[in-house]
Length: 387
Image (cartoon, rainbow, N blue to C red; front, side, top):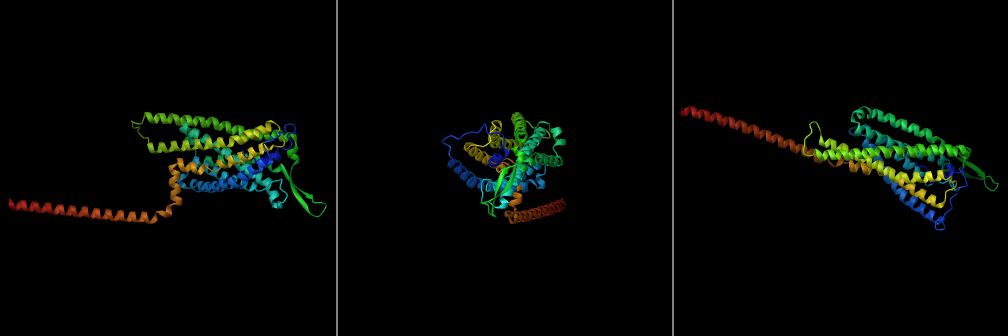
């Protein structure tokens, strides 16, 4: 789940004030400022830049016709969602409802930026679930997988995931209102973000956010844990079978292709494991706040929230490294698209030299054959004269 700490401050503002958590004397406001400086101004920009570049590479490579299959369709849409999530989250890190010197456009960007970042982040969550389910059927039920795992169906399912996440994320847009206040009874005014009347309702605060946490956190994590465990078991069993059949030859089996499919499965398992590791802390933190009816987060929770947001950004940025490491087909396609400029002359000269050598070899063989035939005929004539 991808709500920012500032977003949760506004969204959960009216849950209750009875469960406020007080900070320890050790945790001071200066600690929060230092954390924000390191996370939002140093680490986050670096991760976002690298992540956006890597995801753009993913999109270009996965769109190539050689990479066209159902799994890569899901991974391509996942890269798109991760890219947009990183961009919107990065912009949100520079705007804050508590700042009074921001421009008019910056204040009005906050509700839309929050909604957009949540939309693409939540879409990435469910796309991860969907391609895990698809890989499970493809590995454990290959006959059903051939009919279920098609490119067309992958595109339709991805669109349905986006629409479903959009319907469940739109209410976030109406939780914050930007209001104008007169400044010292003059013609000037200041802008502030405030909780809307909708978010102040007790029924909305409890009902919607428990549904939100369940739909975008509990259910996805449950599905991922179950089916990823089954995939790990299937890979383990496949490795055992391959070791038993190492000295035997199976008719119709392509060891190279089987090994590539195995590496793709391991890659997807790794993607899911990293997803769980990076998303779980933020999910636990959000569940803690909702379950304990914490209206105003403490400094400790804000610090933890910044760290959790950083982990989510890391999760959205590392997939290019995983694809490049595990998939040889991805590496070959990437080299063909981005490194082709290094090989044209060499490849042409090699082909030309090879053609010349082939012609010389063919010509030499023809000459040798003609010479041998002539010699044979000459010898036959000599033998006739001798007799």
